[in-house]
Length: 158
Image (tube, rainbow, N blue to C red; front, side, top):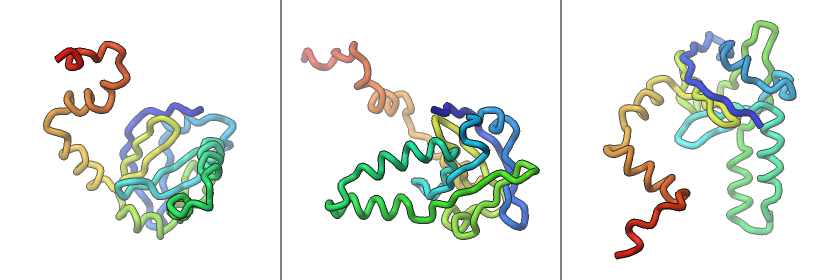
């Protein structure tokens, strides 16, 4: 499983091509063979998965019971717009115009790499997320991650 890390400012050319930074290329698993799947993400970003990672995620989605309406709706939305992409000889990826419109990405983008994915954000949108940081990040961390601690018993005694 990939374990990407990093934040990269990039520019799109007039055709919607993105030069994948060398720092990210070095992190690619050779099993991906420089092939990717681009998909819509949450909060109006795009998500770029190495092809081998996409296959694992896709297999999980395909296990959903399609006789359940919510599952069918999720599956349709999840796969909507998914596009297989490949690096060209110069290390660029051509992002489909429709997907760029979804993310409101024009010229400047930020690649936010974590876990097994690379999120592609319009730079202004991404910068806006950072200025909307929670008032108390420590409280958010406790709410999200606190349940993972075996020593989280201070409030249970009262």
